[in-house]
Length: 245
Ligand SMILES: C[S@@+](CC[C@H](N)C(=O)[O-])C[C@H]1O[C@@H](n2cnc3c(N)ncnc32)[C@H](O)[C@@H]1O
Image (tube, rainbow, N blue to C red; front, side, top):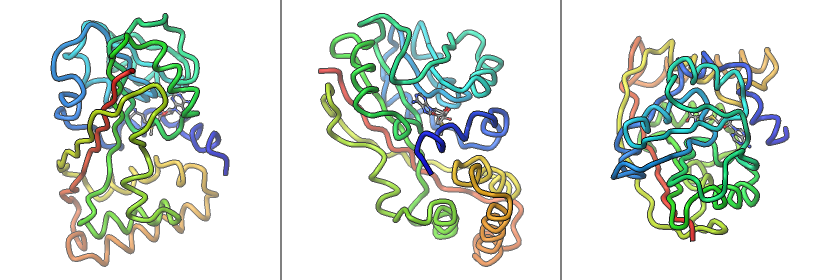
């Protein structure tokens, strides 16, 4: 399956995505923007799950996202945010016009070289780029097992290291911070969350049903989840910070 096809799998699921996907801790936004700035672009903003963490941290918040369905949800939730339909590789924003760019859970979908050049173009010199990914907690065996259903080819080590790089063209790597947090989630919502993941979205109906059955079997078997209708799901958010050089 082509990467572009997987990236487009989100196009029709704005509301489900917003309802079931995890959010981000405020500490992740504070890590990227410790002091208020003039303007920030949230790139690959989706339905605004991270954008909403930025509204108190910048005078102007711009969401850039190629999926109209995702952006419609964002517009309804965050009417004060400027919402632009565009991809990371070509943003209709002037040169040196924003103080910071954030990318939550989306940088791996971009054409990396082109997107880096475009992000560097719109940032002011020395501007901040913050990349974020939510990860499962390596010590949470049942959640890790469910991840392997969705991404059988990805090893546990890959899952925490392949998304970002310390070297990005045009940027200086500053630091990586991992933030541990936890969310309470019902079993039904946990399963529904997996149905918004690209590998489930693009699977044939029969395969998807088999994948869901595997998730149910994992939850039925593990002592921390068996017979429970709600769980505490430990999460990690990895934040990578760069400055435009
Ligand atoms: C996993 S979602 C993350 C959405 C949101 N940032 C969040 O954390 O909830 C990935 C997003 O990247 C967007 N995307 C895919 N390819 C993109 C590209 N080339 N440029 C910008 N966004 C892209 C998708 O449409 C989708 O909304």
